[in-house]
Image (tube, rainbow over all chains, first blue to last red; front, side):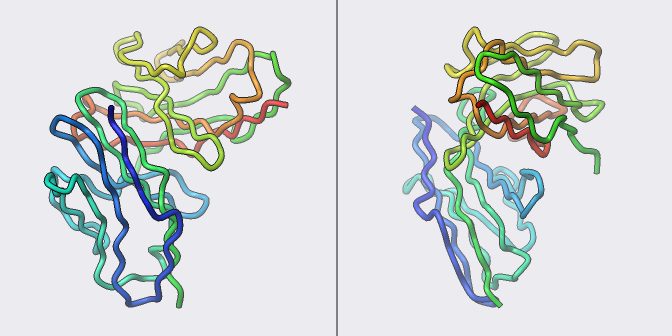
Length: 108
Length: 115
């Protein structure tokens, strides 16, 4: 079975502080992993994907197969980072399996 | 950037009624999807559609659901006889290529309320 767990429903940090949004997955094969973000009153949009090993808006995420994790990190949070963040997995089929999401609030 | 467009943004219907949710995917995209999110729960896959046929569907996508690409631009989700538990935000998405590490473009969603 494919499953994505985001243990934190809410995460609140101050501007300039580091932020880490946790994501753990369950899948027996080689997963494709993604972070999607939904800003207030906007649509879901791709933030980054593990295959690209890219940094978008200062965010990075490393796939750790040993720990089955794909945590999202940013060293210095900005107020505009406040949003809903969803970790998602694709495992050998077309569907994306999403976590429940973490609502990040960056306080001034 | 091009966008996936969904209409209406809100739909209210009576239980047992048929509803059609409409989507206009990005024009050169070939793969189309419906997802839904019941309030407070995960975004869930419903169905994928390619080359005028369903390529994958979830267990949620039962006989009450159907999809169609009637005219080469619209992509619709029909719920034949709505139930209270069909109340959710429904998202359409599209991608240009087969979704292996491919970015999905999501619409802004249709909030369906079944009374």
